Amino acid sequence: MQHLYIWLLILGLGSAVSGIIHQDISAIANVDFDFIVVGGGTAGSVVASRLSENPNLQVLVIEAGPSNANVQDSMVPFNVFSLAGTRFDWNFTSTPQSGLNGRTLPYTRGHILGGSSSINSMFYTRGSSDDYNRFAQVTGDPGWSWDNIQSYIRKNERWTSPADQHDTSGQFDPSDHGFSGMTFVSLPGFSQEIDDMVIQTTKQLNHEFPFNLDMNSGKPLGLGWLQSTIGEGARSSAATSYLNLTVIQRQNLHILLETRVTRILPATNGTDLSFRTVELLSDSGAPVLVNASKEIILSAGTIGTPNILLHSGIGDKDELGRLGIASVIDLPDVGKNLTDQPVISINWATTSQNPFDGLLVNATLKATELAVWEQNRTGPMVTVGINHVAWLRLPSDSDILNQFPDPSAGQNTPHLELAIGSGMASFFPGHFVGVGGALVTPASRGTVQLGSNDVLAKPLIDPGMLNSTFDVMALRESIKSAKRFFAAPAWKGFVLGIAGPLANATTDQELESFIRGNVFPSGHIVGTAAMSPQGANHGVVDPDLRLKHASGLRVVDASVMPFVTCSHTQAPVYIIAERAVDLIKNDWNSP
Ligand SMILES: Cc1cc2nc3c(=O)[nH]c(=O)nc-3n(C[C@H](O)[C@H](O)[C@H](O)COP(=O)(O)OP(=O)(O)OC[C@H]3O[C@@H](n4cnc5c(N)ncnc54)[C@H](O)[C@@H]3O)c2cc1C
Ligand SMILES: *[C@@H]1O[C@H](CO)[C@@H](O)[C@H](O)[C@H]1NC(C)=O
Ligand SMILES: *[C@@H]1O[C@H](CO)[C@@H](O)[C@H](O)[C@H]1NC(C)=O
Ligand SMILES: *[C@@H]1O[C@H](CO)[C@@H](O)[C@H](O)[C@H]1NC(C)=O
Ligand SMILES: *[C@@H]1O[C@H](CO)[C@@H](O)[C@H](O)[C@H]1NC(C)=O
Ligand SMILES: *[C@@H]1O[C@H](CO)[C@@H](O)[C@H](O)[C@H]1NC(C)=O
Ligand SMILES: *[C@@H]1O[C@H](CO)[C@@H](O)[C@H](O)[C@H]1NC(C)=O
Ligand SMILES: *[C@@H]1O[C@H](CO)[C@@H](O)[C@H](O)[C@H]1NC(C)=O
Ligand SMILES: *[C@@H]1O[C@H](CO)[C@@H](O)[C@H](O)[C@H]1NC(C)=O
Ligand SMILES: *[C@@H]1O[C@H](CO)[C@@H](O)[C@H](O)[C@H]1NC(C)=O
Image (tube, rainbow, N blue to C red):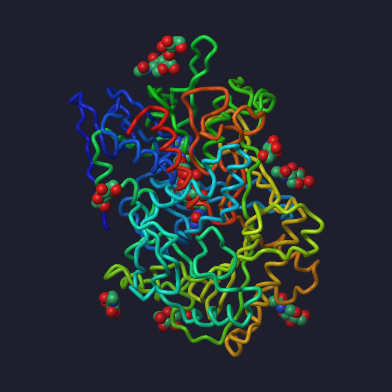
């Protein structure tokens, strides 16, 4: 799967250049584009790939980051930990969080073709049927319901066997999957010493951790085998799948890399407001305008999309006015309702002698195993060291649900996720097992706002993390649950004590202070340009993803989700993007 991209730089011939283009805007000067996709990320790659299936449509993708081709850390699943803080990361940081003793949080976002799907942890989790039925309910569009999105799941998913080719019967339900879509999905390709103990625990603590054959059936509750966007031992991203070597050679698809879009400009025709002009920065830093005859698709992600909208005068009129930005559409919810899932990491020392423990921190061992991966794409580097996930719902009679409204979408929906990691994934040298405990239905909401009218300044990201007491109380339950998990008989003689400061935290107060001091973001941000019913005063886009009160501009990325799914968010983004393509093609009568 080592793609050698073909550089088509036929300059000076006056003919349109297709394929990958670096910065050179003059290469596309003579093309009349039908569609411009802003951001070649997870959703943007889907939209560009699908729209350019019609050879009569000219499609331009503008991506701020570089190509994903030959970026080994993006290909080797285990090297996911090496991508944050590099040139493939936007390097965002949150504002100081009052719920976290004033700490700031790093916000990693993909700055590379494929976007965050080129740098994420590759979990493939769709969420619950309730999540999509709630999307349908709050937008008034039954098209977003679980039943209706099944075809989009299958357009995206290409189920494949794991890297080690093990027998996968009893580890997933084939009837829940698509086998002929674009993005590879597979079960873990490297077995872990703890696999049997995890499965035994589902029997011993059957009430709290029942085995779930397939967490992607719409009913995720229980513990099951993780599915990941990995195929043939390597990451399958929106770029490697939707923008593969064949697709990027299409004559009608143009991909402009390392180029930043700054604003979307309006045009008025009578009283109709439309957006068909994109402002971008040329290599020299001078602004350049590029037009689309049909639509601009904004797919810059949950931080990039509101950032561009706000700089374009689309947002809260008063807030923009204070920064000297003229209001074009007064849409107060742009950048509001940001929702992210907080995570806490808990580790236990073990008596294990597993030679792969500490792979993350042992450079010698890592080099050896990387050589194995390079040889035949097997070995421990084909996973991220997590083979199982448990999805848990707070009991209906719990104190928490008595005190607070339930933020979950329904009875099939977990509040908590426990990702069970082997010693391979431990950040400590030595022998450990760990749990990443996430609150997947947070009640806190945050914002993306501008700090100035400088189009190149970083926006202010305030996730409002742990602002809601519900979130703290629910995360406390995730720690208690993880402790019960490793207290099961299956772990006797293997698991020793909890590592780190949590060892001495027993009271609720001590647990709360541990949580506030150690929680980190999952990166599953949604909601910053949310869908709402046609004609509603709140929200940013209509259920067909068109910007309210205007034509020519659609938002297609994780920003449009009005609530976070009870899952990691790439599968929902793929689903939304595949449906968006149908909505766009329908509107333009395109096959
Ligand atoms: C560290 C991390 C780990 C994650 N792990 C998982 C996981 O294991 N499983 C899972 O399901 N989800 C995971 N997620 C979440 C998931 O990856 C995202 O929800 C999803 O990829 C978002 O897709 P998107 O299309 O909304 O945005 P993105 O994929 O981020 O795409 C946005 C694109 O727009 C580009 N862009 C932004 N601004 C501009 C501009 N001004 N001009 C030009 N281009 C621009 C960006 O460079 C980027 O390529 C993770 C996220 C992160 C950050
Ligand atoms: C992120 O930070 C790293 C380290 O400082 C830097 O090398 C990289 O270029 C930055 N990323 C971007 C997109 O600027
Ligand atoms: C790329 O994807 C297209 C569309 O699905 C497919 O027809 C083609 O075979 C793929 N090419 C490669 C090199 O994988
Ligand atoms: C302006 O609107 C009219 C009426 O809808 C339409 O016929 C015309 O083509 C539009 N002009 C432009 C430049 O979009
Ligand atoms: C693009 O549209 C703008 C108006 O939004 C117009 O001023 C400009 O001339 C157009 N450019 C081209 C090349 O058509
Ligand atoms: C790192 O791995 C090497 C090779 O497996 C091993 O010999 C060494 O003891 C490990 N180092 C530590 C600190 O565990
Ligand atoms: C892969 O390569 C390694 C290192 O050469 C070797 O030990 C292993 O047996 C190979 N595995 C397969 C499945 O070929
Ligand atoms: C979180 O709470 C603090 C303290 O009440 C407040 O200052 C901050 O604005 C809140 N953040 C958000 C995004 O609501
Ligand atoms: C826990 O408390 C004991 C007794 O006070 C102390 O010796 C130990 O260092 C503490 N452990 C941690 C990880 O803080
Ligand atoms: C957030 O979402 C809710 C529910 O959809 C909506 O009522 C509200 O107006 C949105 N905006 C803000 C700023 O809370």
